[in-house]
Image: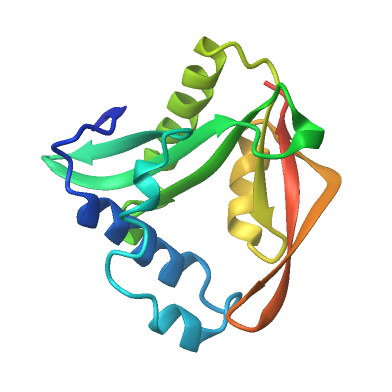
Length: 163
């Protein structure tokens, strides 16, 4: 396994596929199934070009199997903090240490950028992800966001890193 920054040569469609497959797996029963089924191929390919984001890829035997994006906080009230925007893996790679390695790499890169405080958002109903982040040193806060994805009202909880 290799974790490195995205390069111009990396296939954006392959990285988007990680998002797509991860969403369809991790959010089953949380986000309406018709929405998950209708996610078009390449949905995330363009967001990877956001100049304000840093993106890592996790490569296993030459294939991109995971990705994580992070940046300075996108929220004014958390100015001066680092934010992990996403960590996604192909379903076959979940629960095998790849997510932990990707998270540790994102945290290390944010620390190099000078961020002492780091946070991320997790869907309240995504108990697997919440457990994972808690095991890795994150704690839930009282901060929340309300979303509507696929016609369903959802709540996101802000987690802060205490490590």
